[in-house]
Image (cartoon, rainbow, N blue to C red; front, side, top):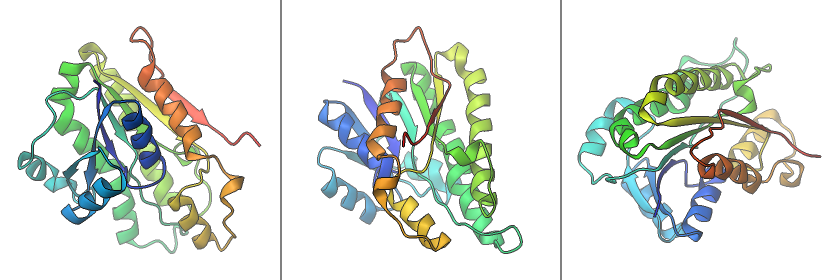
Length: 229
């Protein structure tokens, strides 16, 4: 059965995708920031396997993974974890910039690097859950958008580099989706959060599954998902 490694499986799009894959009989391994969080995710999503690695400290991922049992085969790697902190360029602190660039860009690059040997053997698919902010930057979204523009560049370069190794790379750009992150954004914007106004996470999951399940003679490179109402 296929084996998937997913970051951000604790909530939102990552959690929804994890449950769908498990329900259809696939194996899912998720990355949690610490042992406590790994235990919590395992209790909330029965059947999921966990690895511990802190995406806020990508320089330690190699050490952390070296102490754990990694899957011998990985059919897909889905980067669904992310953080956001809004603010103007004049107000955002260096710490806020660093956190968003680290979690949203540097950590996916490092995790991909570490898993590439196994991904190449499997001819895996790598999916970066990007954002509409990865295509256009709006006021007060500079740091988040910069991290997501960088994530697009990472995916584009990786796709060209790994094509000969049989690894396929997809970027998915969801519009505003009803997730805990979106709720945080609305709190920062001072706007009432009404989940029904936004894309259901399962709609984004459907688009990710399309990329994962596509026959191997084709590849979805970039896929934008926008509200239909």
